[in-house]
Length: 240
Image 1 (cartoon, rainbow, N blue to C red):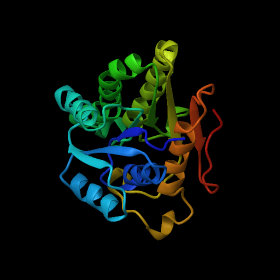
Image 2: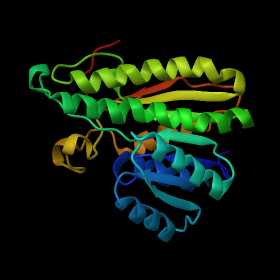
Image 3: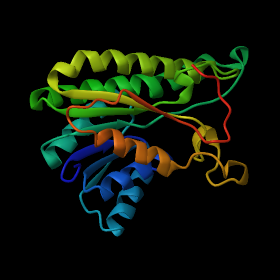
């Protein structure tokens, strides 16, 4: 169902974003993968070595409007259409409120909220013109409840959930679908951690999140999936 379609994936240099790109490539999608460092070009090369040649790499900062607009322009120049935007780029840190600096607060909002807003804003004119498209944001289960020592990160995910819900209502008349993937604990590089640590062996894997993206993006045109919430079996969490 996704074969021949075009996807943009942000934060695709490693971890969840890199795996999402691979899963979408396996579905036959053409890709524009985005990362803030030049390692994004290595990710593209690895995909091509696996036989997925319809991929371009774009180094860009999702917090800067001109760079985000350039991402959309380059994808359209290369493929002439955009069917899917995956807002995966994100950062997080976990501190008490009084230990959080204003710069830290701003950075996490710039990437996690402003980046999502700018990506959606930039791609919408094209999707509206085609009267189709899907926007998926990788959010978090803390978009549904609060945790201690994570006020900034949690606040960004509540913001993303509200933004996505409002946007979904705003663009449904154009045939555009908007949804969020809200995972619990994932074995990845998040918050300056390492992937593959022994204590994370029972956590969600990056493939689990990528599979959820494929499922949401593959939904038939008459169906809209607002959100997918998933947790590792070992995680205890409050019921929203």
